[in-house]
Amino acid sequence: MLAKIYQPAKSAMQSGPGRSDEWVMEYVPQERRSVDPLMGYTTSSDTQSQVKLSFETQDAAIAYAERNGIPYQVIEPTRREHVRKSYADNFKFGRIGSWTH
Image (cartoon, rainbow, N blue to C red):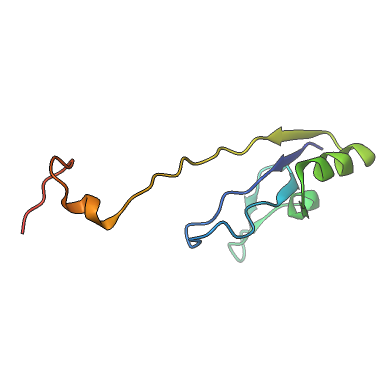
């Protein structure tokens, strides 16, 4: 069963970089989820898809996978480019977009 190792992106509710330096290893689902006809819940008999392990570094996650014989795929994180902005930029001459009173 293949596992993917990645660094999760921060959620939309986060303003700072909290917990964005940890690495996660989780198994790729082997089968599709199905809908329970009686209750309408989504269900799966694949229990490995519920496992989600956190590591401090990428190397620690890779070492764990190799030590336990788990085939893995590393997904490199994409870094955001920080754009410095100031409140005064909203009123500068030649700004993109129209501004009216």
